[in-house]
Each structure stands twice: as structure tokens, then as C-alpha cells.
Amino acid sequence: MRRAGRCWASWSAESARCSARIGGSLGTALLNTLSTSAATDYLSGKNPKDPAVLAHAALESYSTAYWWSAAFFAAGLIISVLLYRRGAPVQNPDAAPVVHM
Image 1 (cartoon, rainbow, N blue to C red):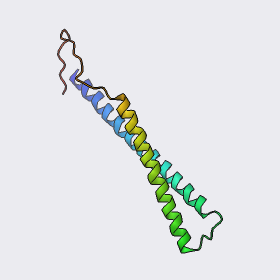
Image 2: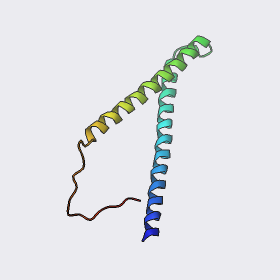
Image 3: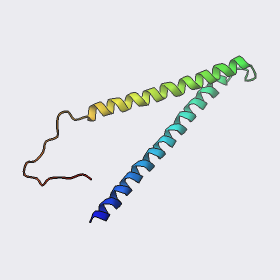
Image 4: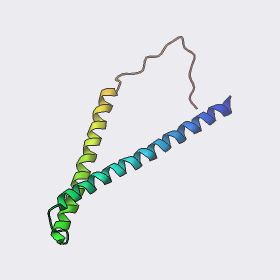
């Protein structure tokens, strides 16, 4: 029984790690797409060979990526605040003791 518990704990940890990596990859790809779209939109109708225009396009792309990531962070903060449970968890005094290893 002890070995089965370790197996599930290991599987659970690997699943969480894999989910975090996939989420990070998707988030990076989404922010990259948004910033590239912002730079492309800024360059449309302008001279792309002008260094000042290219610098402003880069600033526009960085600004867009920053504000979108700030919006995602704010959304996560709001969701976390709404889901947070206050106070100590209620325990059943008749329940068997639980030991975490």
C-alpha cells in the first residue's frame, strides 16, 4: 500500500509539472502572437525601412504584450479572491486521523 501511495504522488507531481509547462508554453505563444500582431498593425501604412518607425513598432509590441499579461494577471487575481475560503477548515471530530507523508 505504501508503494502505491508513492506512485500516485509521483504521478500527481509529474502531471502538475507537465500542466505548468504546457500552460507556460501556451501563454508565451499567445503573448508572442498578440505582440507580433500589434507590431504588424503599427507598421501597416508606414515605411518599414525607417529606424524610428521600427523602434516605435517594437515599443508598441512590448506595450501590448505587457498590458495583456497585466490583464491576465488581474483576471487571475480576481478569480483567486472570489474562490478563496476564509477561516480554518471545519474538521469532523469523529473522523479518523489523517497523516500526510
